[in-house]
Amino acid sequence: MPESPLVAEHLAVTRRFFLQLGAAGLAAWQLSPLAAQADDLAGKAALAEAVAGLEYLTLREKFQLVERGEPLPYTHPIEKLREVGLTQETWQLEVVSDPDAKAQIEAPLSKELGTALNWQALMKLAETRAVRYLKVMTCNNIDTPLGMGLWEGVPLRDVIWLTKPTGDIRRVYYYGYHNDAPKQIFRSSLPIGRVLEDPPGEYPVLLCYKLNGEFLDGKRGGPVRMLVPDAYGFKSVKWLIRVVLTNAPFANDTYAAGNNDIDSWMKTSSRIIARPAKVSAGESVPVTGLAHVGISGLSKVQYCLFPQEPAWPADDPWFTKADWKDAQLLPPPERWAGDLPDGKLPEGTIGIDAATGRPKSWPLRYSIAHWATLLTGIAPGKYTLRCRSIDANGIAQPLPRPFAKSGGNAIHELPLTVEET
Figure 1 (cartoon, one colour):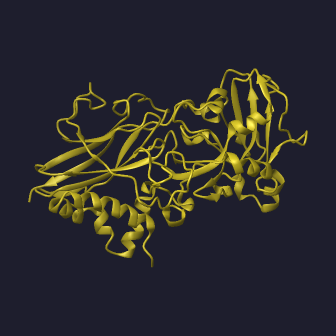
Figure 2 (cartoon, rainbow, N blue to C red):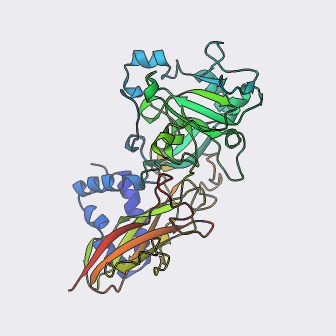
Figure 3 (spheres, rainbow, N blue to C red):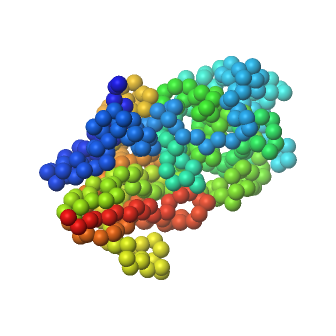
């Protein structure tokens, strides 16, 4: 049985780090659960499942899903999919004015008028306007990634301009197909300014049709989905069929009904992924983890180890007085894995140097980064191991936005026991 590329990449990344630390690091690596599981095929399979969220690019079939609809739209028979426009040959996108808060547009893209954007017209735009970038897909109420991919599409603004807008537009409402059932409608919205203009260094909002170099299948939201790079997954509505330009000043997002902050952009945060739960005194403790890089970037990851007793003071809920130490951010990979040929990113990927194929800066926003450290000289006892990110503004997690329902970024903690020898 061939070794999983995901297993090989993760083991290589973490092993290189501990090898750099010399004999102590190598010895700790041998004690690591990662190394122990790598000695047999069953262990490798278990490791592949355990670190599925850690790969730099997630295989399309391994992306975790947060889904809506009964039945799920992509499960319809092919005849129904053709009928409702969820195949490439029948897909059409309407871009129209809101009848209740009219936007001024001169050339709506409408099925009734026979002017809706079809697949062939989208692919024609893609010949000159296609954009691709890396993005980790996350849910605002789940603190682990659903997967990271290389996404490709045409900027939504290029299609909006086809409608010849002239004014009275404040927001863009957009809708995915959900069985023509009002209670199942999944919709989201953005300010028109975010769609038409990218701040310096920002990625555009896309009408997305590819993941990891292949056209989207129905399970991933195809033929076309929205892709909002700086936002949590609920903004990237699947099975896109309708865009409404509106002069309304308010959002209409489905997620708002669950008391979610629908304008909270992706946060920077970190998690511990692997560490021995129990070691003997004198043993070094290898720790590896994952960071999500949000809109404010990432400058470092830190960790602290503190006895479980006495309890941490209640007046310091964000552990600002803890003895935080810097972990090591690991470099970008030589191979990005996923479904890409040879694991290489294609030319033209935003943020990637065309000559070297390497990131122009690291970590990339809206991506993931691995980190690692080696704990040594720990006295026997019961401890709590914590980690946090420091963003590019120097602000420590969970700040600047520690609130629930606006993206999971609570400080992650795991127990660690050091036993007498």
